[in-house]
Amino acid sequence: MATPWTVEQVLSLAPDATSQTAARGLSTPAHWSGTGTVESLVWGRCRGSGSKPYQTVVDLAGAAYQCTCPSRKSPCKHTLGLLLLWAAGGVPDVAEPADFAAVWADSREDRAAATAHRATRVAAPKDPEQAARTAARRQQRVTRGLAELDVWLSDQVRTGIAGASADAYRRFDGMAARMVDAQAPGVAATLRRLPQVTSSGPGWPGRLLAELAQLRLLVAAHQRLGELPEPLAATVRSRIGYTVIAEEVLTTAPVRDLWHVLGSTETDSGNLVTRRTWLWAAAADRPALVLTFGAGGQQPDRSLVGGTALDADLHFTPASRRCALSSVSSTPKPRRCPASRPPHVVELSAGSSTTTRPLEPRTRGSRSGPRSSTSVPPAADGSGGSWTRPETASRRAAPRNRCGRRWRLPAETS
Image (cartoon, rainbow, N blue to C red):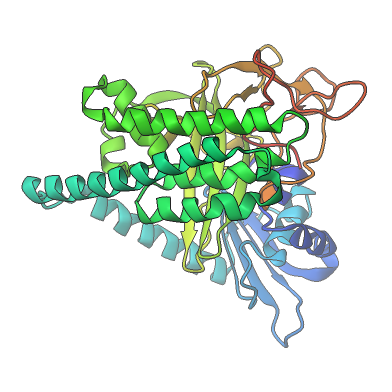
């Protein structure tokens, strides 16, 4: 029998607030028939607008789900409503799954076995000369693009940035698009964040100038990439956005730990949904970022649910908190973070050193930001709150680091 989730953990899977509201309306037994749960499966039939009820089934072990409704949202309101009913104890334990649930579970096992088989096959060796030529062409494109960025940065300083708040998006979006063409997506992402700096309150010109200076430093570092020590060169490549091959990441030494899932955010660029899930190692006391993607109408993997913890091996990319998960020895389960070692806020600004501080037990909503966010585990001190950013007595404020700059939070409570 799987450990029941909390309501917050179920709602954290919702693609939007509308789905959360609709799911609450479907979380009563009156809407469901033929419900049941065995091991990690939960299923049921929900009465809909059609003549036949919708068949809904969830695999709790992988947070995977299927529903016969026509909704394009994933998970749909029926899936969320079934999970809310299960979380409230409204789904009975049975000996065998329903036929439609068993067929779906078997098909998942078949696909997993096929994937594992493909992963064990020896890949055809790549032509090293062809790979070297491809890498050289990529670096040439990046170099030409960064040369244009260097001139543009000089123009910004020469003409002044005092009026940047009046035309922030027009000013930065054009160069960001050029960086995408130059295959420097990391630089493009930084440029697209700069309009937010111009509306960040008093003192924004100084903060904007600091961001532009960091970009100039990145350009200079790329010009001397061959002279830099490998760890520093890896950092530069990561900031610029050079591709890191997943197979190469999995060859690095794994970090085995009990990883707490602090929270997740999702951004939708129209043709690509990116889910960022933040983890914290219980023993190593370090953060990790797992990225999953959904392209072409597909949804990203949402199997890592806020408020759970899993014993797993993580492989980190060079000079980055990003990682790949290679093996899990236990199903993610709801766990409380120990009061002596709460989650931390991590300063993520490019070019700055990592600084951490514990979060105060207080629940607060995010007023803006990505499409969705999940809650971090509840505090274990009996306060009933969650670890989130502190507030001053006078106004809401993000915590600041030693230099007085605002912290950038990887995830906030919803």
